[in-house]
Image 1 (cartoon, rainbow, N blue to C red):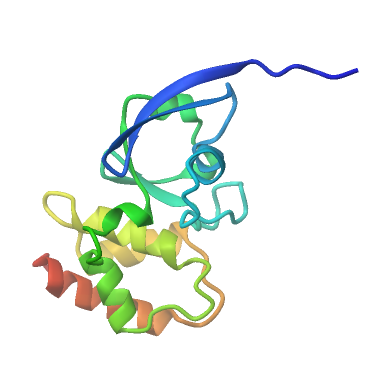
Image 2: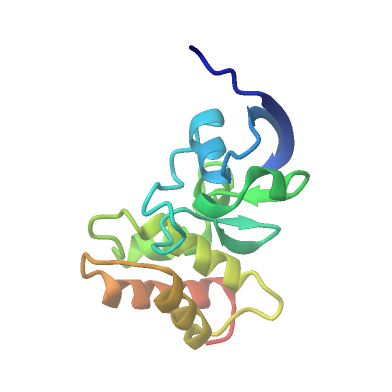
Amino acid sequence: MTRTVALESRSLVVNGRDVTVNVPEDTPLLAALRHDLDLKGTRVGCTEGYCGACTVLVEGRPVQSCNTPLWSVEGKSVTTVEGLKQGDVLGPVQEAFLLEQAAQCGYCTNGIIMTVAGMLSQSPPATKHEIVEVLDERHICRCGAQTRILKAIDRAILMTGARA
């Protein structure tokens, strides 16, 4: 016996584009981004909201997309790591991470970049101390790139003109 799943149409703005997806009502934002919109930069990690690999910006604020229901962001602006670029130019946080070689395995990096970018775009921007506290609370990095990540945060702060 085959079970039919009812699909619902959800509209949101992803990386500056109006998009509509047809998904089951309980679809998490992460699934819609990766499977329906083919945005693979948002990583699948723990799917429980602990590791931070799936972090995106919703209305400029970092959220973990694995446990964010798609219906809760309907009509809102979502930015993924792909959306930080302007054409072929990396965003300042992406550039800082690249220049400092702040990724080893790279799995957690996109989520960390999104958290840093979101916190630096706040008004007023977060301080390095505030960013590190949030990263320590919401992100897991086991590969040993933490020193380079801290250097990248310093560089991103300088590149964005935020306060240290």
